[in-house]
Amino acid sequence: MRIDISKIILYRITHVNNLDDILLKGMLCSPNHDKANPHYTQIGDNSLIQSRSLRSIPLPPFGSFGDYVSFYFCYRSPMLYEIQRGFQVGKKEPGEIIYFVSSIKKIKDEGCKYVFSDGHAAAYSSQFFAKYSELKNIDWNIINSKYWFDNDEDPDRKRRKQAEFLVYSHVPLDAVIGIGVYNEKVKNDVEALLQSCNIKNLIVKVKEDYYY
Image 1 (tube, rainbow, N blue to C red):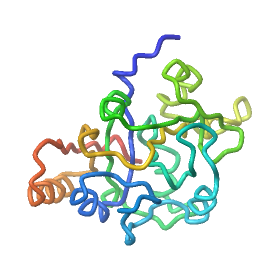
Image 2: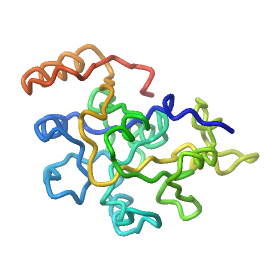
Image 3: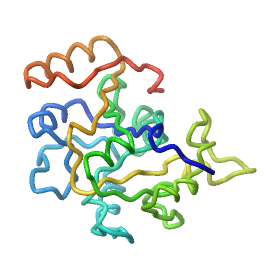
């Protein structure tokens, strides 16, 4: 299977409260980065975040999950579903969540180091890879599918849907294609913040289909 990396888009969700710090620093920081925001607003399950932070990455540049910025290969992830429904985490309204959209090509062009997994990176059954040729190990059918709940025929769909692309240390804003938001109000707020930071090369789009 031949994979065209120029067409693989990456998605990272975060709370809109984190945007000003990201813009001021000009990058998305990993949790362990020396410039990481001490007041970062988490949107995930704190117990899972804590357990992930202690696990090691088995490939260069190694380190732990806390040394990486994580992206999904899809929007409308299972994580977002749990966040919007309030399962295991505090419920968040879709307007509180924004997307940073990038691509493997952008990450590569910026010289960032990375690894990727064939499923939820915290799952012990997931495998890690670092070569473009190994992208064939990701289940692109489930990545691109609207439906991902486990069923009797395939009890592993949810894990595979959450395959991750992990970027070491930080992601410069130059590697970001744009920002996806839920509605026009959030778009206007984000654009005003971009203007106040004198950032002119980031496109903000309303992408209601990115949400549940």
